[in-house]
Length: 459
Image (cartoon, rainbow, N blue to C red; front, side, top):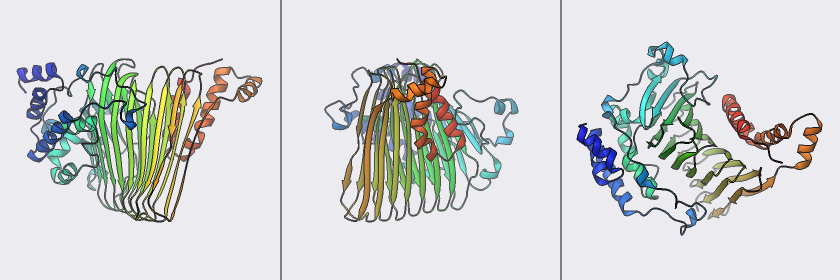
């Protein structure tokens, strides 16, 4: 990339000039460049969402300035991205030093690891045992060049619709970095794989996660985001796309732990095919404002999905998560449990929907959202919903919000605990139901510890 082109990208933000320079620098396959251009057209045609839209009625973007950020920084061409490095070839000193963040990888023996900074992959490693069996895990930038035959169909018919809203279109046009996990049919990866995305102050992250499991495959992916500066501004405009093939099993953990100056916009969607199983755990702890659409589509008979959500807000954070359990085939089961705790002047929005198509008979759908209020100045909106077109189904939903029980606090203090210790214990107990559903011990402990450190004392 020339110096003039670099300066153009840095000076013009999300202009057409910057976008064209971004494309020229990447030197990607023609089919991908065309898909990006079509998404850019959608971005330019689509207005920024506002509160006149039902989905955005409780999320105020008036303080958000897209022009304050820009396209991901100067990238190497995809072919020049860090290679898929086997674990045993990685420098021992680098392997011993955990990257920033790293809550989910503590005390875990990993099959591979990918680390990105500001949408650029800086480390990619996969144990030779899995590489030799055809597993692909590493930079998505590199994968579109090295494995274009595998990914072309995926990008030409993306799981996340680029026209869903302005942020989906912007991401589809400008995604950079990101992670690909592909597990061939019949291969079971026994150790977890781990990916970490970091942001430096004032930068943008356009990372995209693509997970494809072939028929009968099994894998566990732990994904985490973190900021170098806990209060610095930043932008994440991302997407997660998951395809769980017939009779495959995926455990996926996504911990959003950005600093409190980051604007976080994401579309996340999974397709679960015939007889497949998905366990998807969300941890939502960070960001200034987060607007996330998480959709699970059960597209094959006998598909199952369990969705777990752990949310904690503080300060003036605003987190808005919209979930959809879409039953498109018969004899499928979905089970969603989101729990949130709020303190200070934070605002938490959960809007859930179970949608059952006409042909999805024998559906078993469940969704629940519980919230624990830790201070008088928070706001919580909890909105469950059902849309059922089939007539032979079992669907249940519910939502609760309540304050810390003063009698429980008093009892704990008579046992020698301080008020803060008592509240922390009550918060841990509140989340225990969802912790018990998480089948990865290290993830349970990481979420429990992260939440415990955030609880403050209120009289």
